[in-house]
Length: 259
Length: 259
Image (cartoon, rainbow over all chains, first blue to last red):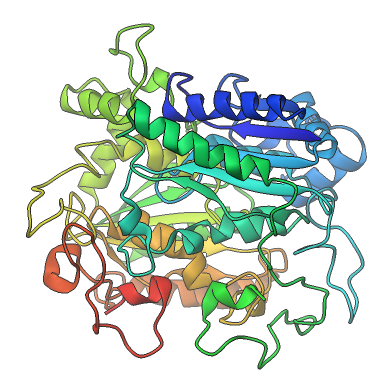
C-alpha cells in the first residue's frame, strides 16, 4: 500500500527523527511504498497569507475562503501546496508525526493543514440540503483512506489520564482526530503516543518501537475510531446537534461523537 | 491599565481587523494604554527552529528545551522573541485575537506561543517537591495578569453547543485556555466568540461590538474561570491526578478542572 508520513520536528537526531526512520524501515520491510513530507527539511511555509494566492488582484481585500476556492479550482495554487495535495490523494494511509507542543501540533504542521486543506478540496464540498450538510465528518476527499497520529509528549502519562491535570489525551487530540482527520473523510485510528520523550534510553526505545511496529502492522486492519457520521442519521440538520437518546448514560462533550 | 492585544489575521479589512480596531478604540476611551502585536503585519516567524538559538554550537544536536533554557537565561534570544516577552511582562491584561482555523489558533499565533514561551520563563520554573510541582496551572510568570480570547468562527453557534457536531466551544478552547493561558499563571476569562463570521452586516457588527465593549469594560472586574490551582491541594503530587470526590456528579474530562 501507499503511505504518506508528514513529519514535523526540526532535529533529525531527535526521538521523533528516530521514530520516523524506524517507521519508514518497518513499512518498507512490509512491502509498502512510503513518502515522507519532512516539513522542517522542506522549509515548509507555515503561515497562510496572501502569498498563497498569487493570482488574486493586488491590493484587493483578502477573503481567505474565496481566495482558496478560486486558487484550487483554477489550478493557481503554489507548487508546494499542490504537491502535498497530490501526496495525500496518492496515499492509502497518512501518518502525522509530531511532538505535542502546548497541547497541540507544532505551528509548522498546523500551517500545513491550513494551506493544504483548500476550500473545495478538504472543506466546502458536497450537497447542502435537509438530508446532507456537505461531505464532511466521515465523508469527503479522503474517504477510504486511513490516518493515525504518532505523537511524543514531554509530560508524564499520568498527567494525561482521565483525572490528570493536563486533561485526557483523547480529548486534547480530539480537535485533530475529529476536526482535522475525520472531517475530510479519513478513517482515524487510535493515536500512538510516547510520553516523557526526554527520558528515552536504548532499552526504552526498543520497547517503544516494538509497540509502534505492532501498530503499523495493523494500519489497514485495525478498527478505526467509531466517530459518528454527520449524514448517517445521528444528527439533526442543519443544527448538527446529536439527536437525543443516542449517547450512553453520562457521556459528555467530545465523547458524544463516538458511537 | 496596560493591555496587550496579540492579533493574528492577515487582512486588516477583515472582521478580525475591524474588531481589533474597535477594541483599541474602546480601551483607549476607557483610559487604558494599549499595545498591539500584529503578527502578520510584523512578519512574525511562525516556525520554532534552530535559528531561534543563534549561540548554540553549529552542527550540535538541537534539544529545544535545553536550547530555549540557555537562550533565555543568557539573554541570547532573538530580538523579536525578547520584545514579545517584554510586552507580556508590561501588560496587566492580554487579549489573544484570532479566527478559529481547523478548531484551533492560526499557525502564526501557535508559533508565537512556541517561540515566546521560553523554558525558564513560561514553563520549567519553580520548586518540584512532594508539595509543589513547579509554578504552573495558576502560578507562574503571568500570575496577577488577566487574559481573554477574542475568537471568530465560520461555523454556526449551534454546531459548537454541548451536543453540536464540532464539539463544545469551551472544550475546543480548553487546550488554549487551560494549557496556554492558565498554565503560566494568567487568570482566564470566558472567551468572547463570534460565530458565522462570514455573515456580518453593519447592524450585526454593531451588536457584536456592543457585546465586546461590555466584556472589555469588565476586563479587570469579571470573575475569572475557576480552574483548579495545581498546588492548591486538589491534585495528588507527582501524579497530578485530581483527588477523588472533588468533582460534581457526572463531571468528566476537561470539566474536572473547574472548581
